[in-house]
Length: 100
Image 1 (cartoon, rainbow, N blue to C red):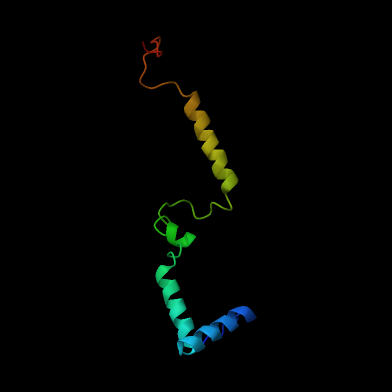
Image 2: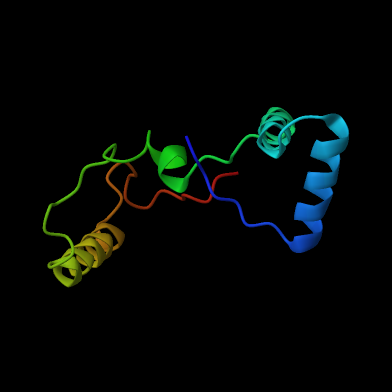
């Protein structure tokens, strides 16, 4: 594979000097430098998609929630109101629930 790499004039001059002093082509020096970099560089961080891949599609809900969100929220609040107004099912009338 052929790639084009843009170097500063100073970096290019240093590369050419090193290659000439070593008796190898500049492309060999570049390949070896990239190879060493890849061996010592930290591993790339996984993407957000890769991190959440096990969670996507895991929880189901209504398919039209985006268009019916206000009605869904109203129903949730109505259910909470009904639950808070209902008398306790397992306590006898007149029994003290404070414990102790």
